[in-house]
Image (cartoon, rainbow, N blue to C red; front, side, top):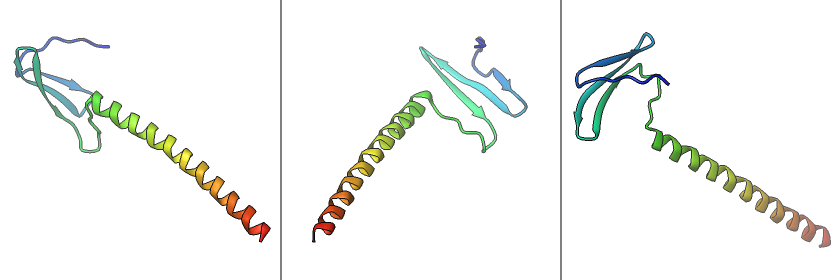
Length: 83
């Protein structure tokens, strides 16, 4: 990890097309601006973690739903065979 010290209104360039600007520093809060191409996704880490957790939860739920559907289908097959 590269660690840099910047003051308000200073910038950092990443690669050929990303510029990170320090807009202001007030107390313990740093306001930054990121200038990047539209095809580059920029997410706060807490949002990324939330999305990841929701995806894991949804995937697990999908497996449970499929298992329930299989059980129901099998019960219907058994009932149909008895009739």
